[in-house]
Length: 343
Ligand code: KG4
Ligand code: ZN
Image (cartoon, rainbow, N blue to C red):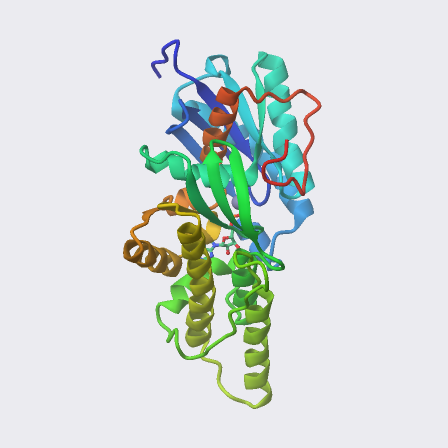
């Protein structure tokens, strides 16, 4: 790879949950490599992520994944300007693997270490394929662990307008999928099955949180689905899984779209992005696109590969943090409940 003196090359590592990932990012927006080793097949056996198994798999895979990322980008550790790593939030044992690896490389090669907030990474995924996108904009973050409505005021500067009071959107997808027997991870399976079902077969409740118009609550809809399934079983009725999936998805998507559009209008923001694993949901994309069009809001979303956990998004976030002067020492620790905007 040709590298000029002005080029900034970041190696990024992501290991907060069940993907071991490494990526080389040039000047914040050009992805030279994006290697992801997924553990999904392993965790499927247990119906969800088993933290202890995740940590062990990260240890097994991380060196190989980093080597591949460097090779594909055609760079060596000596070419790097910084190393970015997710240090929270996430599973502590899983995070520690990435953090320890990044610290070792930073120390051995004497390159700056930049710790990255996982959600800042998800938001930054939008910069990869939208060279024109710059803050300020509104971002709906919907992942397996988080549901946040955020104003991105500047690179790495956030104002949180709303968050979930209970389950994250992805968590609700996963739990409902398990209940209708689709297995883990549920989001993509519900998405697929919804296409064959009637989204108006059932009217599951759409919870509103009093006094907090941008907050979310998904435990109500999840319980309503579980109650419906139990009732069917007890009365010996057939369960039409596709209708349940489609109605559940419509309900969640409607809440997400309504909140996001209301926040954009209330705050007079004309750019709206989505981020996180649920951001690849086809129903959400279609509904959000239409709502944005109707309200003259520019809509941004990353490709599915940049929605679910990956290290390219961490590299992008690390680049902007690096440019702002963020540096972490070798005492950087994994912080499982790190809040957005905290250091
Ligand atoms: O962002 P992510 O990879 O990990 C976290 O940071 O949590 O999100 C994973 C979540 C899982 O709950 C998964 O079921 C959900 O994203 N997901 C989807 C879709 N693809 C992944 N949910 C709905 N529709 C999808 N197409
Ligand atoms: Zn994530």
